[in-house]
Length: 72
Image 1 (cartoon, rainbow, N blue to C red):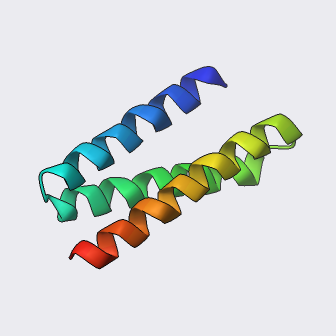
Image 2: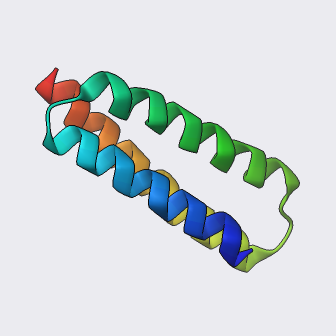
Image 3: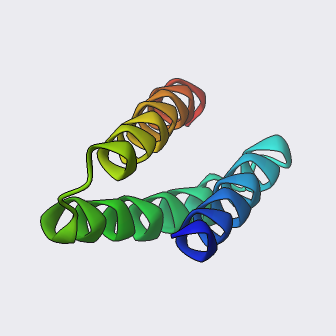
């Protein structure tokens, strides 16, 4: 479980880094990739603890998407 979330954290940092240098196309592509991963995790998870972690990352992704839409 930690490996999955470590990869998600890394990819979210890549999104933030891309946004920082105004590379919104790469950030958007990576955001979709992470979002798809989280959707897959939701479909396969039954543990409440994991669902809470997934929800945290979904909120963060939603916030990043809103930030990107206001900058593009």
